[in-house]
Length: 250
Image (cartoon, rainbow, N blue to C red):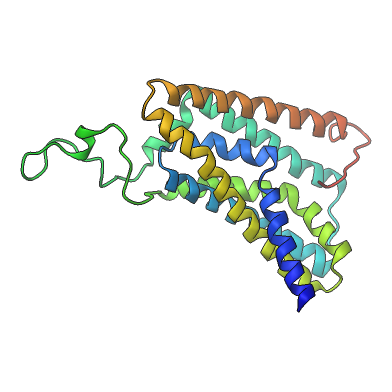
């Protein structure tokens, strides 16, 4: 029992730490900068963590139970996809396409009505420009976006996590339980991170004109820069685009 509790605790804490990886934080930042609600940001973090957990568990199960071996080039390609995704997210932010798509698929908010209310008093949207919804309204697009980003990130990091578990936990069922707890820790960690990111964004964008645009541009530029760095490391340094690739899952 003590060993099981140790596995649960360690897995949860390592999952939370895993959420703080630079590429994870940058990816969710490009999404969160478009939301002025802390609750919506926390939901985005939870969806990202859920997508990440799904991939980690599925790939990890294949490696642990069926001894699946991931070829070097496939493993590097999975990691390279994260670099390309960061570049794409950055470009969408810089061009304003991300905001236009978000607004196009945004669900109606009960707090954003126009004109006058029944008794002729100004509506909430007239009294304030903050437009914070009473609950986190998230449509299908806004649900799938962080979920898919999380799935892609999980695909890149699943092999390293599974191999680490395989070498330290010899009971396959305990190893799978560890993967689930690790995933829950990642969800919790990403929720904390997105909440921490969203709080100053929500405060500043509601008080300083043009701050939202500046944050969007900054997050987009950072995402492109880090995506290019990852692509260079994987494509040339790790040798994916050469005749002799070498891969150390991380």
